[in-house]
Image 1 (cartoon, rainbow, N blue to C red):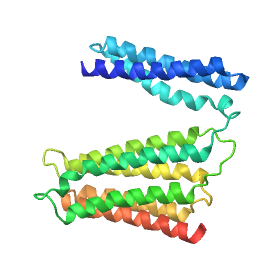
Image 2: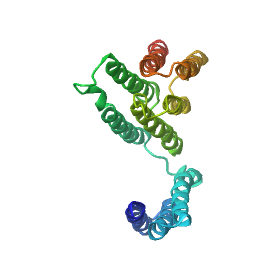
Image 3: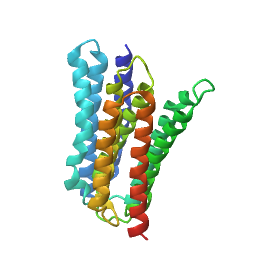
Image 4: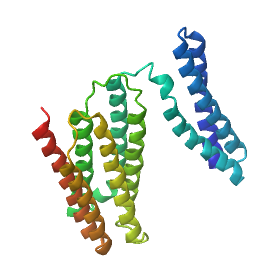
Length: 270
């Protein structure tokens, strides 16, 4: 029943957005505006139909599969609208501001996720290190997307900027879950470590892709340090997978990478 409610609610939301695009289509006078709104309305109506199918046939694997396929396809489909959207470029700084706000909210969820380490019964030096890890990731994100990135992009559709943020959303989600698992006796330590470093990898891949928009491209030295520190941290944590070593190592990895990117910014960007 939970699946049914979710799919129906999401389908109604998609339908609302679709109606908005349809209204804009009839209000638009330019051909390119009509093409853009028609393309996105088509994507949304497709997602709406698949979600309703999932909501109605939620007890069937086929129905649920159709709903998830509709969600995934509707995420990917806007990437193929560039032939239309390139004629109507976005205000890049506005898009960046909104995506940054979304990620700040996501970091807030991560802080909520580690709140259990800050109770009177659980507070310890490890609690401070875990918070330091989250702070280092946030600082790394801000250095890239607030200091290194060139906000004055021209003739950009914004599709790449939107899609690269999927990596950071999924990465932070994995990190948040892993931070609960690393001190959970019921969770296998290797699983927790793998989730953690997969999250780090997705987070740093996001930064690598964002380099496309940078004022000054990040050099190979910075990239090498990020890769080596993350792989080394994963390898060491795999062999020393108890709570305290894992926390110390992940804090060291994120701090090394944050400091490396900050030094690059100070040296090469005004």
